[in-house]
Amino acid sequence: MKRSFNMVNVLLAVTFLSHITWAVKGSSHCQQTDPWEIRPHSVSITEFGAVGDGVTLNTKAFQNAIFYLNSFTDKGGAKLFVPAGRWLTGSFDLISHLTLWLDKDAVILGSKNPDDWPVVDPLPSYGQGRELPGARHRSLIYGCNLTDVIITGDNGTIDGQGSVWWNWFQSKTLNYTRPHLVELKNSTGVVISNLNFLNSPFWTIHPVYCSRVTVHNVTILAPLDSPNTDGIDPDSSDDVCIEDCYISTGDDLISIKSGWDEYGISFARPSTNITIRRLTGHNRNGSGIAIGSEMSGGVSEVHAENLYFFNTSTAIIIKTAPGRGGYVRNIYISDVTLSDVDTAIRFNSNFSEHPDEFYDPKALPLIERITVKDVRGDNIKVAGLLNGIEGDSFRNLCLLSITLNVTSESPWNCSYIQGYSAMVSPETCEPLKESIYPTHYSDCYHLSNHLHSSAHRHLSKETMADIQC
Ligand SMILES: *[C@@H]1O[C@H](CO)[C@@H](O)[C@H](O)[C@H]1NC(C)=O
Ligand SMILES: *[C@@H]1O[C@H](CO)[C@@H](O)[C@H](O)[C@H]1NC(C)=O
Ligand SMILES: *[C@@H]1O[C@H](CO)[C@@H](O)[C@H](O)[C@H]1NC(C)=O
Ligand SMILES: *[C@@H]1O[C@H](CO)[C@@H](O)[C@H](O)[C@H]1NC(C)=O
Ligand SMILES: *[C@@H]1O[C@H](CO)[C@@H](O)[C@H](O)[C@H]1NC(C)=O
Ligand SMILES: *[C@@H]1O[C@H](CO)[C@@H](O)[C@H](O)[C@H]1NC(C)=O
Ligand SMILES: *[C@@H]1O[C@H](CO)[C@@H](O)[C@H](O)[C@H]1NC(C)=O
Ligand SMILES: *[C@@H]1O[C@H](CO)[C@@H](O)[C@H](O)[C@H]1NC(C)=O
Ligand SMILES: *[C@@H]1O[C@H](CO)[C@@H](O)[C@H](O)[C@H]1NC(C)=O
Ligand SMILES: *[C@@H]1O[C@H](CO)[C@@H](O)[C@H](O)[C@H]1NC(C)=O
Ligand SMILES: *[C@@H]1O[C@H](CO)[C@@H](O)[C@H](O)[C@H]1NC(C)=O
Figure 1 (cartoon, rainbow, N blue to C red):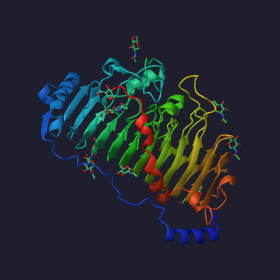
Figure 2 (cartoon, rainbow, N blue to C red):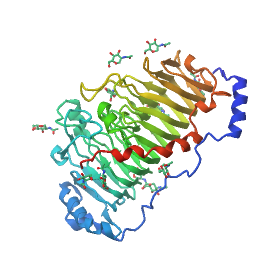
Figure 3 (cartoon, protein in one colour):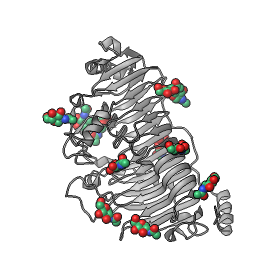
Figure 4 (cartoon, protein in one colour):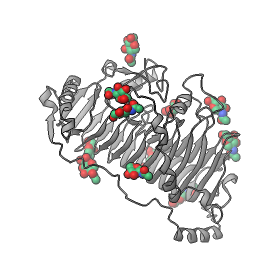
């Protein structure tokens, strides 16, 4: 393959890199409470009559156990222990200062009866269920208004048995939007670790309106052809850290969101300070890391590094559309290894699904300061499909040190975008040809910008409308 790096660029880059730190330094682990930390009180689900035979419905046992443990929330909290066994259940609610512990060979199974997944109001930042107008099913494991909640264990499994839902979706016989496997709403101090999450009916782990969320060392699996089974979807949430995960599903591995069109715009709660590290995974019909398409409350300060995606449709994507409004800014993605990927980097500005006809087609998203750096890829079909919106601003996209082994005749296809590059092979498209060095370095997003810009982010939260649980 012909290397087309300009020697001047290489020298300038080396000079700059030796003086300024691009990489996001600091702790390379999420701050987290130790999941092995002993809660002062602990009960086993078997004490509440649960039967782990995979057949008996244990919803009442989970609800009763958690109702009992509620009396310990102001006494240091409690642990609900789920031993080895197959524990069939419908949706149940978590409480603050709770550890839900799934022991080795413990499997929580989602009921296949939709009546065991109650119907609740749509999220205010979506206005509608995501798939159907009106209400939506509540997640299997649900929490709202909580602080200090831990879902962990010794490699236990939460299996949504989602195939019934995928079939209802495909046969268009759903009455309401499908449920997530785990949803935490308006909660602070959430840790999800050391477990397997399988076969979610819809998105797998969905923190929405949350702060301080850690997802660490989890495996998320769903069949490659299962519809919309995203792995982790931080939504209008801040201070989220996701690390050491393996995800293989039917849709995006991680998708960062912040509400849908006019509902997301007026709810105005962004996703910000999202860290993703050491993520491995693949899918056939989705991306490795997505932002959007619901990004109307804004997405900023996303740092992702040490990513390995294989046999994936798209590695990194920003999805948006006229009507979304909002912004995606200050995104830094580095140290990415790709094998057998259709498209390495994509801006798709034509996600034209809207909640209803009241969206404002003039509400254009602002996309700026997106840095993608240190990407190596083998057997990539297309390097970049980067299509902005005519009359809109997609600016300061910076590509640095990218080497892709591309099979397509036209590796880049760019329109309505602006940015800079250095050391990119195959050679970038025209709108990105101008070199980052020496004069455009400060137009590109990197660490020093991050520290500066996160300082003011909590201001708008004061005005947040009440969230119904
Ligand atoms: C979020 O939950 C807390 C309780 O943890 C509650 O005080 C607060 O009002 C809730 N926020 C909203 C916007 O509903
Ligand atoms: C990750 O999870 C597995 C399975 O639960 C556990 O054996 C392992 O110790 C965990 N690793 C870390 C670093 O926590
Ligand atoms: C954890 O569980 C999964 C699925 O049951 C299994 O494949 C894996 O080997 C287990 N890992 C450890 C560390 O026990
Ligand atoms: C949808 O509603 C109909 C009529 O109430 C019911 O028979 C059917 O089971 C429901 N389907 C689902 C997937 O909830
Ligand atoms: C970003 O979030 C992490 C938790 O993931 C937190 O430790 C850190 O303080 C946050 N940074 C800022 C600048 O708020
Ligand atoms: C891929 O996903 C999109 C949107 O989720 C869907 O419309 C399409 O049918 C899927 N394609 C395949 C091959 O599964
Ligand atoms: C991708 O899938 C193909 C076909 O299943 C397989 O031959 C190839 O080894 C896979 N690539 C990687 C990196 O796993
Ligand atoms: C956007 O998608 C619609 C259909 O979903 C299509 O008609 C239109 O041509 C697309 N626009 C662009 C610019 O690709
Ligand atoms: C990609 O690189 C591999 C070696 O890493 C080489 O064998 C292969 O021919 C290259 N393919 C293309 C299309 O350049
Ligand atoms: C870029 O993509 C557009 C839309 O898919 C297509 O019409 C156009 O021909 C492509 N341009 C190049 C140079 O490949
Ligand atoms: C959550 O907090 C909001 C706002 O204070 C309140 O309206 C709602 O009832 C609370 N829900 C629960 C279950 O505590």
